[in-house]
Amino acid sequence: MMNREPLPGASNAMAMGIISIITPFVCCGPFGIIFSIIGLVSAGKAEKLYYDNPELYSGFENVKTAKILSYIGLGISLVCLLALILFFGTIAAVITTGSFDQY
Image (cartoon, rainbow, N blue to C red; front, side):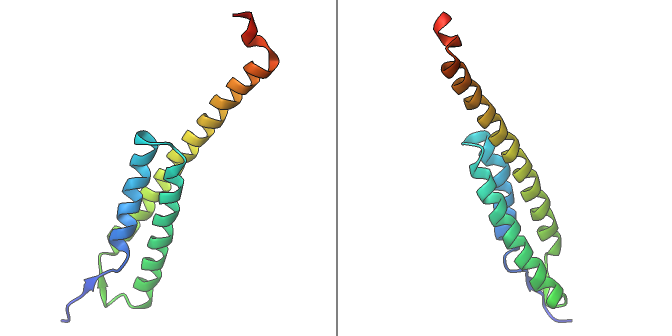
């Protein structure tokens, strides 16, 4: 039995997936979208590499997990982006309609 090497790009995809979940809570929400996309692209490349030669690589489970984490991070980031747009849209609406002048 030959030694199987770790799947290239799987650890990068996993790291980007984790960062994409943490970023919206620690920093500005939309930055998580960038890390999610990077994680999904890395996972896609690793998945293609694995499907081309599955007997050479190990750690395909990490790619599946990384894709799930990246999708979750993308969802959280999009919700944060929508909340940010609504927040600033409300502020802009209040200021432009003159409702703010009453107080």
